[in-house]
Length: 638
Image (cartoon, rainbow, N blue to C red; front, side, top):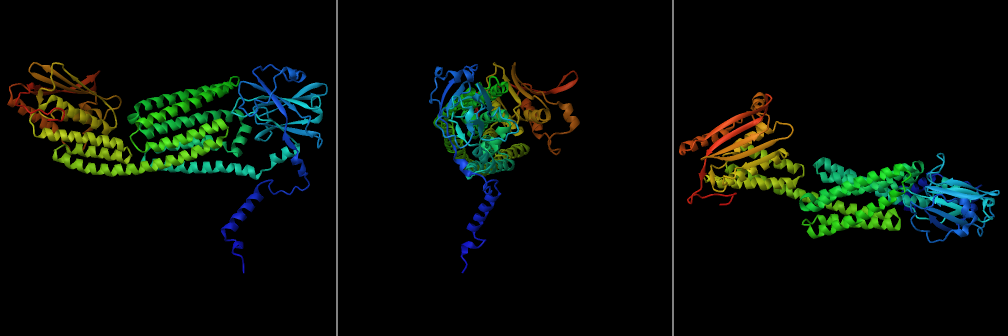
């Protein structure tokens, strides 16, 4: 009977076959170089060393080798971050190491920018150079720097001296290693399983992030919700910073283009902070819910832009590139303090539960970033970023659900408003346009704006219903209704054209009476036929003046003028007649016949150098004041 595990279709057999093929395809893992002496791989170890650092760039290696006792060598600086403004001198003692296996050996250093090794050359001192910025362009990039030496080159048969300069991304000062050249060559040409395993977290991170980026961009293009666009851009910045740090890619790029990758690495991490702040600002709706924080975020984004410019200038200067590390350190601590204070402010003032997601995710990322900074391991930041993205994704799903609920609520309110507006005998075209504007906001996921529009529209309807039972209302109420109407038109046209009201101090708007909604048709005509077709700055001005026993009302716009309208035809539906203006004219005629004061309407075409610059409508209304018997509605309240 055949063992079922041996069948090729079994999942375990498939996995084993895949791994076997993978190993055979990786250069060097399955090579049969039996003629090589693999015992030479065992010849390696740490070199006993002492170090001292100085800002004196004129100090020379031979001076130190001839008088090492004059310099404060110690081991205290090993394991600490290399400071960009200092020169590190490593005094290497190879006297007690077993170097009998070969004459030629290698020293391996971390991939510092510049390394100079001083050695004996006959009766004098000579040197060799290595490091990211000193490597031969034909040399393959590697995660470490190697410098050859022979036993005959040891000063006093035991010492070597290394000079280290490093201004690019932060490294810890490590003890160099000695190794046989065969070991150095072997690990340059072969890939180890440990090296492959080290790539896995980066590949998982990149794959997960790319999926989230594509998903977020897809949601944005479907719903036009800008939050998903900002989120996708933030995720892309994370991938460009953390994902590119995958050793198999970053080491190669850094080896071939050290200065370019130095600039890239320093600038992209600031870009991550900028994209995060923009995303968080939009997510929090900070402009309305946290106005102080919104202004602070705007300031910080501009500050980070200035910091990036300073970083780039310092890196390009080469001579002052070491200062850039201090700029980065300042930026990191500034962001830690700013975000910490911001979180406290948000916790004390937040109203929506969804904000908890942002705080939780951001705090996890902050802890990961701080761990990476203090423990000098970028993987802690990757873990923090991965958890943050998971929490943010939950928040985005929660947001989508809330938006769908809000859409259903708004649709119900639209139906209710339409019935109420029809009962109030409002202009059907205005009702149609307003409801379409609300739906447009809903479709574009701008539910907050849709809600604001509904609130103002409902308030205007209530005012009109209140006015419908009255022959006269206070001028104050008329202006309040007019202001609501103009704000709705501004939201409908998605532009904030200038609207100014100038009132003669001699007019008491609370006691002066006018027929309800008398001015609205003229304002509507100015907006639709005058300002809507105009390009550039748009202004609408309402002026109320007292002239004897009359009120002079001037409605002035800087639109295209009546000549444009006549030449182009009506802007709205051709079947639609300006019924409201005709009714208003008749109302004024009735007003004229009912009282002794004279009421009339004048329309003036405004021109400049023979060109139309707008239209001016002047209404002269009788000045009527409230008496004790008048029931006045003021600002919608009776």
